[in-house]
Image (cartoon, rainbow, N blue to C red; front, side, top):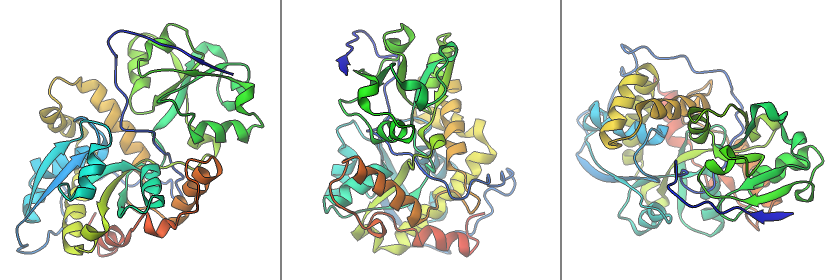
Length: 352
């Protein structure tokens, strides 16, 4: 069953980029937290040739980990040590960042893993070179007293979906417990969580690093339901480049060494990292940005180093997208993700 809810008024909090994809994490052991004294002990390229590049984040300034890594790499001089001058920009929406990447005016951008898979299916020359989200950033919330703790409890309930598309993650969760969309009431909702707070929908779609904090701050206790916890193979945000940029291996290596170095620094110094974020995100709430950053750090950790991934993870995601017709043909995931540069940095001990 399908109905629509319309809510006027100021949006409490806009959502992140477009529909995300979560993850499957093969290595769940948290990476050791670097100390402030060791987080930056990484050898930069000796006397590197100066280069100027443009980074465009896929959304407004905020503490998404791949955004924050760029802010910190600039502020702490990691880009400078690599000989990089980075023009930091932010997308104004409508996939502007991906358009500019393909046009060549942007060197590196961010995008979800699902976006990367879809673009490669469309024969566009984009490739992910680092994966931050070892699980996806989309999930669901229900009121804590509603008795809804997982997809088996969705039967007979109203379940929201955004942007006019019922996501593959929801369909996969339902399928995992023997339910179909006919067993729930699908409700088209916007990005204002008052739809949920005011009781117009039982189960509300959220970005896990965003609306749960906003809803709790409004005084509503919730249960958070993450598709990853129900064996749905989702993945999150990546750094994306074109194949032409990837061929410039030295440039990609310098960018990743600086940003992964910054990621270690962020993990060791989260309060200082938020302060740097706020220089870009003027007027943003510091506590909310810390929630966002902490969530992203937790979802990025792997036993073998943040930013890495296996092709098995990507294949599981591609299979999910194909099964639920987000894509219509098989995709060679080796063309979607190339981990050679970041793996090499870790294997040579250049990221600690």
